[in-house]
Figure 1 (cartoon, one colour):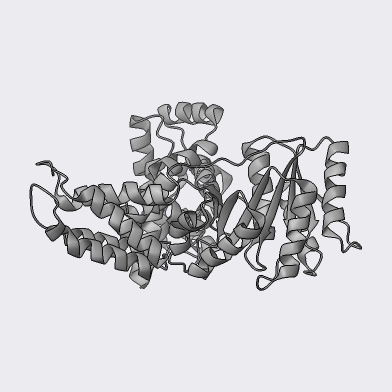
Figure 2: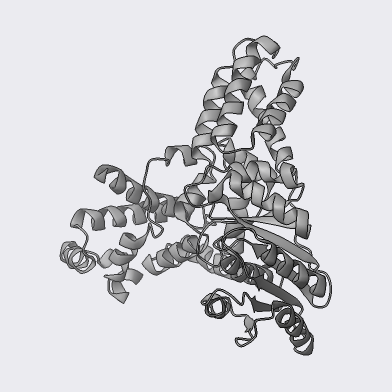
Length: 450
């Protein structure tokens, strides 16, 4: 996401020459390239022009400190203006009323149903609330079944009326059911169409009027680019929704919708959906997104994800094992499991400043540790607990059992031993160095194949 835009913006900053001050003369070419980069990323032309005008106004006459180059100063100004353009600060979802009702709207294929499941998981796990999913799409044959499957995956109940074709009645009955069962959050998935039409708008408007939801979210496919912004405007003119959700940001998208949608509809982006898994949902933080667009990473989000998987009791046990030099391959597997729960490896790495660009042309599987796991699972329980048992014949057996080479087995064992020594010295390091070594070994293998 945003890779092409990031590269073009970086090149534009390098055009800025001169010392002392940023002037109209030395900033002209840079602003021209910034505007071109934004338009290439499918940002609305008027938004791109207004943005560069504001950057110019902020930049002209800025004194450049001795330790800061003009390009660095411009990067800071662009970063702040990008964050402001996308909303400035994160906007939380409102959970008002008993039950709190959230209405989901959008075109067919935008990812509404999948997002409904993700949002149910988010509210249940992050807000500690009970959630009822409502199958309000009475036209798409598989919509009800899909929502049931998603409900099972995230552990929430799904309200359906398979024989009914009245979405207003279904939604009203679902709210009554939630009150009876003391469920405090209701998420209503509505029907979409392949294009905007009056019947669809009338139907969604009727559901909204009947429910008076505390939150109406418009779900839009980011891969549709500028069309996403136009669609959002038409929906907002009729529904006056409360916030926008961008889906499929993990795909081949130029990212223009994320940058320009806020200024066009004057409604905040609240969530980003970046994959098919039910935990692939992020609160939208404009400042962090601006950092990622400019290649600065997103360390705060990375730390937050790590904290979600952090178990204080397990950390204490691990620290004792490290101090006593008892860290084994079972502990190694447990650390891999925690890393995998945090999300896609390449996405996580891209949150580290400078790493995203370095990994741009390197292919990393979603399951980057699968070969490491295969080798460890080919060990006997005794070998995992006591790596000192691993002699040549045992390593050959493990290599054959895992389908990997003897060299790969030896490399993993060396990395394990090096990491164990380092972790014993810095007891409390939760295996970060070891994980990076394992990932680095995998990436090196991929790079050689290319």
